[in-house]
Amino acid sequence: MPPRDRAVLRRFDLDLDDPGQARFFIDGVRAADELIAEESAARRCQGRPSPPR
Image (cartoon, rainbow, N blue to C red; front, side, top):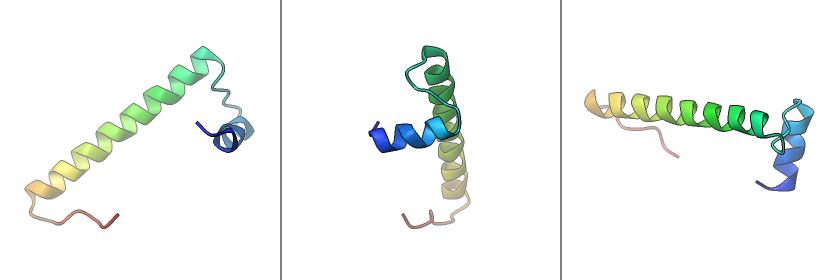
């Protein structure tokens, strides 16, 4: 992760050098990825196009 991004997270009191906080962050990212994938699959099943990237 670039230093600039780490600095932003530290402003929110999240230190990725701390193993517990890093795990918390990674778990959150994984959960978000799973939700995004589920929403995307639901859109495909309904015949709606995915939003442009």
